[in-house]
Image 1 (spheres, rainbow, N blue to C red):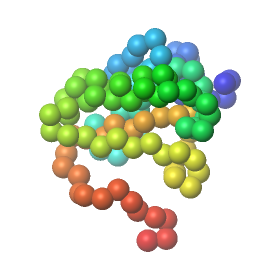
Image 2 (image 1 turned 120 degrees about the horizontal axis):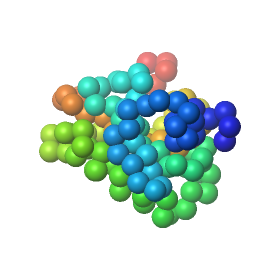
Image 3 (image 1 turned 60 degrees about the vertical axis):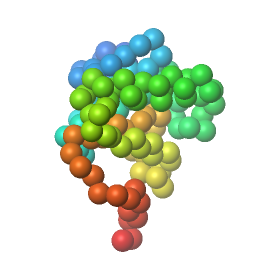
Image 4 (image 1 turned 90 degrees about the vertical axis):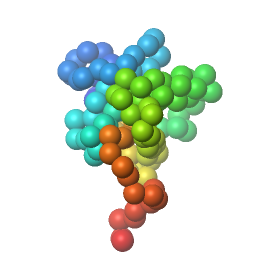
Length: 117
C-alpha cells in the first residue's frame, strides 16, 4: 500500500531500527516508545487490521515472532506485555496490523484505560 508508513518501512523507504525479521514478519523499535522496550511486530504484507483476512498461518508467524523479539530485547525472562490495538476505538493509529511488545520495567496490573476516565 503506497501511503502506509509501515509498508514503507518494510520496503526500506523509511529508516527504522530493525530488531528481528524473517520472510513474513519484521520487528522494529517504535519511534514514540511507551516503555523502555517498545517494539512493533508487523507482517511484511499489508493488512489493515485483524479482520483483513490474514489467515491463520500469517497470524501464527506474527505471534511466533513475539517471544523471539522479547529475547533479542532482553525482556524474555523478566516479562513483557503484548498489545494489539484493532480499529479506531481501540486506538489503532496506523492502518497496518501490528503487535506492540513492551517491557523493560515493571508494569502495573490491568490493561484498560478509556478516553473518558
